Length: 464
Image (cartoon, rainbow, N blue to C red):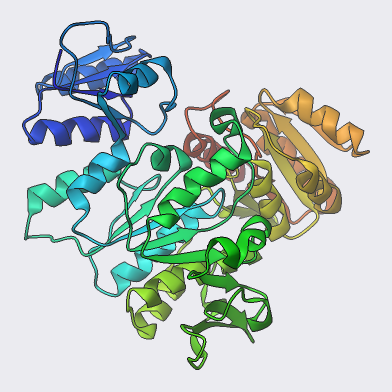
């Protein structure tokens, strides 16, 4: 049995195995699945003397047990082999924790939340980089955290890291033991991943762990749940509000007034203008919230106003999150494939002009669909349903009295049909905002968004 076992052959697991190997550990990777892609990676890693066992779960019934098990973010923390490992006293950690142990001498900005993480992470990294910092974005976005650790150890002084900007899912926090960021950001909190975390309280406590461990804390004060727990849970935090100073929780934070992001760093400090909200190209109030949190992190890190302003003006937005693909005969095609739950999809619809033609569906998640259905009734001229969730979504739409929907099953059918319906209803927008995971038809939400992009561009080319 090797000294260290990494479970899960994704990007994070491979990076963790390489990092351990570089440190001198005898390491083995294992994954319950097998596929042509995984077989290719198995061969590549074999050339690096990292054995990979596919279609395999580590056997802990043997006399010689591993000293360490590292878990990829996609692997549930409570599967039998991990429960058994912890019972046997085998150190069991997540890939993010392993990266932290190599990078803890560098200050981190850790960003978590149900929605808004990716945009806030990308914008925060862009601001830090505009200020001249070597501050890679990693975790759920960009590089795996262990890839950053690998690069950091390889380059040593040549390309020294100044900050780490990490997007952390609840899965990554759950399996981290000592992760303690300089700055922690909590973007939003709504029910998600309950199939894995069981209760809302568990999910909240996992998120809260990383904020409790952060030296400085930033919260979205406009989020209903976070606003409710407020100062009683987080008395020293910096709060944000797009609604102005009167809505700020506590006496310090960042808010929007007269079209400007305003900073108030202490109860006695004079409010200061930082950047005009109109500098950000991205639409929607939720993106103004993301802007506030990113600016807050930058100011708490000592970044000057000029660098912030420059970065915000240049920021292009995030792929698959309200991403403008093309305009065809006055109709905008917008890719919001990253909207994998009801709340994110509701925000997507709220952010575009109406009437809109909505493409939704995929692999449904548990959650409250009330707000999303209300937004469909208010803003969608028609809804095209794809994937496994289509029949259930059709039933829900009928129950609330919305009848202008059609089950089209696939993206390939949805795109041309959406263009036709947009013409018919004089809709200015076709919006892919699925409110679902992608795993029924695609390996991930990125692949779903890319399919939509390609189909839209093909449609334009064919009909222009």
